[in-house]
Amino acid sequence: MQIAIVLFDRFTALDAVGPYEMLSRAPGAETVFVAERAGAVRNDTGSLSLVADRTFADVPAPEVVLVPGGPGQSGQMENEELLGWLRTADTTSTWTTSVCTGSLLLAAAGLLSGRRATTHWLALDELKKYGAGPTGERVVIDGKYVTAAGVSAGIDMGLTLLGRIAGDDHARAVQLLTEYDPQPPYDCGSPAKAPAAMVEEWRSKSRFILT
Image (cartoon, rainbow, N blue to C red):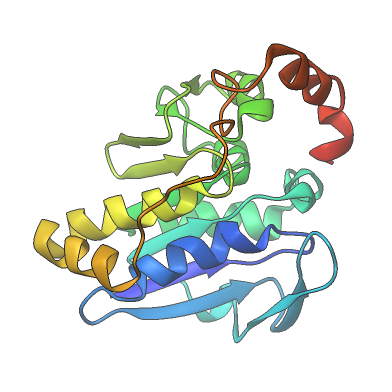
């Protein structure tokens, strides 16, 4: 099973690496990082890079497509090299997935029209522009499309999808072996839980954060 994780300049590292850590442990998984051009791709802070060993053309028909988000997503919304590859890969994929604002790229490719989907809470309304139905859920499955909310939700998405691919017992074993047992020191991980003033502050800054 070939799992293709898309990279683009200024992606968010955990969006890609979180689900990678879960899905790469599926039986028979071949996980490949793909980009418009092969080579190192820098994350959103510029301090870390992942290597795309293959170009889009090298990976025409993966079983699983995974698109991370990050500030660089906005610069890819009209990139036909990427959007065209997503459409082509989607015609044969078993699962087409995203994390955070990666769902906006799936939406821009026309893949989420009429479907329920999620993304980072600051970008939920953007999904409506492409005919998708935004939800505040952490992981959304609609047919073969699996979208995750912001950043850390990619780990949950990866584990959820791993259960669908390899069975619940295998996914539970991966959860155990990766010791994925979240116990955050603060209960502030969603706009429903965070102080209202903090939520509004970051909403007012969202156009600077997401671009």
